[in-house]
Image (cartoon, rainbow, N blue to C red; front, side, top):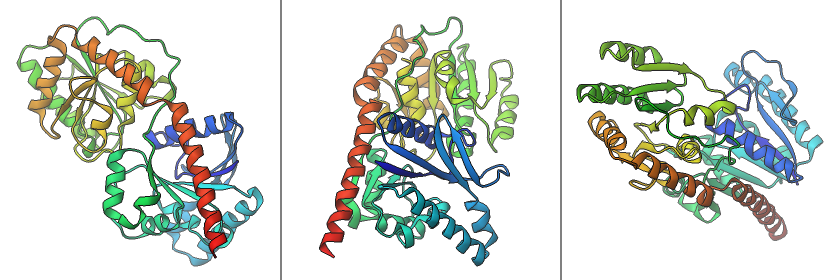
Length: 374
């Protein structure tokens, strides 16, 4: 099957959960014999053109700059480029991801009028207005990456429930070998873009409470973002400079190695998380996760079985869970083993790839039926 895969960002230019997932899925589709062309946005001053990453053909176009210019002639010219690309590649199916601005160039019209399409929903839907509404109307199959996202989509677009399926996110099983928990003081790892909604400041406050209780713990914050200066001030305010490390961005290839250097992972989001890919990566490394009970995180972290769940924005509850984890003999190991076993059985990446192949086939059947009926 010829798959035109559209995503606003793609490795190695943009590193995030969606980009890592996209590259993993595309690589496995290609390994199964599908022909995949990725269309993504230019970033960092790149020139539009043809690129390659891990053997995958990538076309980068200036979607963001063109839309920001608000020049109708520029938008029309870029639409013609997209149409020409579609005409040249002749995809059997179009795979879109979320309702990002670049999706404007992929609504059902022109060269894309009759192409079967799958729309993956990677974020909880908060608004039924605008581009996402059109893309949902256009989609033959919509894929929610968690049950939580599916429920949000059902509330936002009740008319599209029948064509929405749930394919839980997954990551390929790592080649990185397992390792015992590190010796010495417990190390808690927070991973992700450093923004207010990710709640890393709550982890710092919890670490300060643990110190007051006499529990010697270390906090590693991996990632970067606009909220980092505030976090650094929080660390200084609480006198945790000798117990906190800001590690910066971790390359995808180093993520599993970084996780296994920790005792446990903290997923402290204040707001809805669609899924929680880091929590699943931790499970693959047999590391327990302490997560906030928001969005799709409880679908990955089972309280008392693979990790612990706490209310969002509550440093006292987080500190209690961190203390319970390290003071209860054998709890880190038991939760870690259970997490690994659940990752193997419930979040198998090959099964995910097959489910997307099924979604592509379903989209093709739906589009064929519509054309026959017309």
